[in-house]
Image 1 (cartoon, one colour):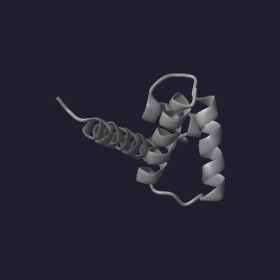
Image 2 (cartoon, one colour):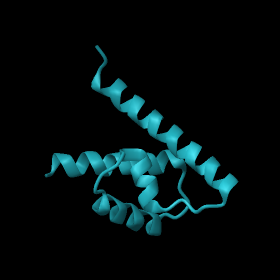
Image 3 (tube, helix red, strand yellow):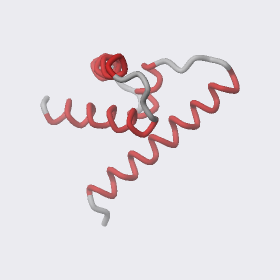
Image 4 (cartoon, one colour):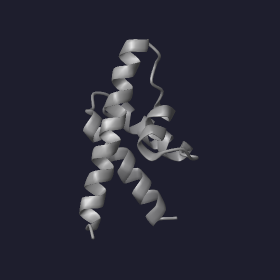
Length: 85
């Protein structure tokens, strides 16, 4: 049985890998990676409009951000939105 921390670490690691893969593909195809698509890559399909908006706001405040920090922020917003629903 895995702990919640190990599950969170695995979820984070998987999301970072998916985002990095998509960014590499974007460089090869020259198709822009939208913020909506990025959030969907991290969280899966769903109605993530509010998380997209919060992420956009965060990027305006801090435009130079690493993939790790971006994924961490999206996952944190996701967890926060469900804990406060």
